[in-house]
Length: 207
Image (cartoon, rainbow, N blue to C red; front, top):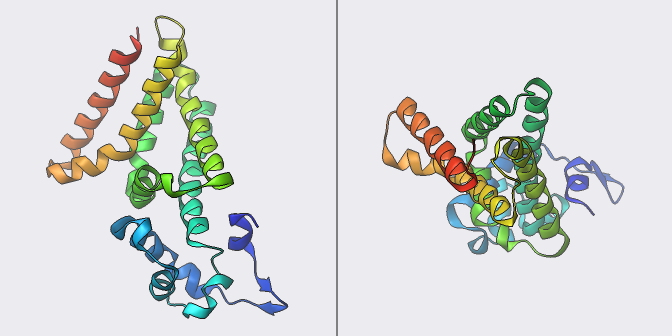
């Protein structure tokens, strides 16, 4: 069953499942994955963190891999949603690219732990879930490629596309690195923006 079906299900085996505690505490599972690492977390650990009896955890979560995928899916769906809104209001490629970078960095305020999982734990996915996660990331990279292609001095080849994939990883991780630097927020944001734009200009020879 797809992950979203578990999020939406309200009846199982003819019995209404009260999901309020799970939904209220779901962010704690996100924190557990991010802080301890996916491989170090058991289903029993998840049950304890979620405030659910170990024997009933599977009524709420198909598997810990399914839950990891949900968190990564949520992140890229939000990034894609933001990108669609930006494309609707920014036709000029330079403005669109700047807005995409700003929106990506802004999202760290609400989804910082999601970003950590996407970069550090996505490799733990397998089979169809891994394929879906990679497809979501590629779809997001494509939203950056579109304005970049218009700004590039020549058509983007495989190397250019690989550069965009690296920039997405940088966008996913840079705010956390900046937090560790203890720079003032405004100064850190300005530095991150300059680093991203400089990386793009250097890698793709933007005009």
